[in-house]
Length: 342
Image 1 (spheres, rainbow, N blue to C red):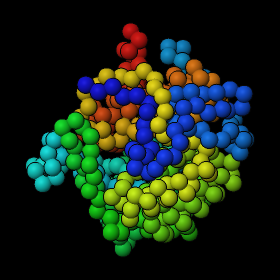
Image 2: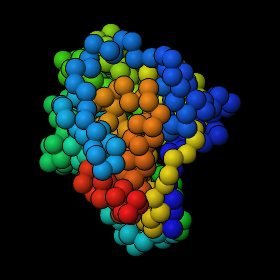
Image 3: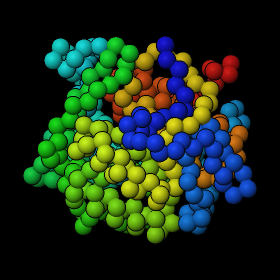
């Protein structure tokens, strides 16, 4: 059995001694023990907040009442997950094909929870690329920002599942289409409509995607959009650990929300089958609530309730194989929460 807590790590100890924030001041208040770090007040984003969310009477969680948009930027790919855990890639008898990629996982996770999301990224002009675009559409994610590259394939990742459910990755992207997204292919209108612009760090590794990432974030920031950053470390994709450290920290100060080490809220015990996408489900749970009402970060009790909700999102995700196929609906999360207090 595994208990999931809001202690999602950003660096896993490999990127040096960047400080861990146990609390952060926001105006006159303080929020503690969060799975997210809020380095700034949301002064630039305040004009974007038009609708306050109502609270659910049964659990204190904010109801999704408006169409506050979260735009997710980065990679979308195909994960191949062994059908039997605890074996190496060479030993695995078969693999399950599952759509994935951290930013895309978050976009689908938000939509499954009743929120409004969009994805911006590039896939190959191939069967896998069109399949991924269709999956976004089927899950009510705006895919107008997707681009298709005729000369590069959609990225693939083979994921080994150890007996404890943890993962090891082997990527096929030399280069893959996601690495080739260019600034002139960005949908800036979509970006500026967002309440939150969410991204990871893999899109910072190579050009031209790195420049596209930086340009998209700048346009979002200038438009008063809140920037959400998941420093999703995949060392095999970087030239070295030092380049990963520098690349990930290079945009740290521009973000308004960062997922990192912190304290705990109550977890949910589950049988872990595959941990792929658990952190992305946690992020989706949190951003879906912040997009409706950013003021909840100024109230510790409300934030704790939001993080409990996010924890359950992650917990339910590890009970199935694959990332996107396992992401829970809002109804499933609320039902699981109700069982924990019954």
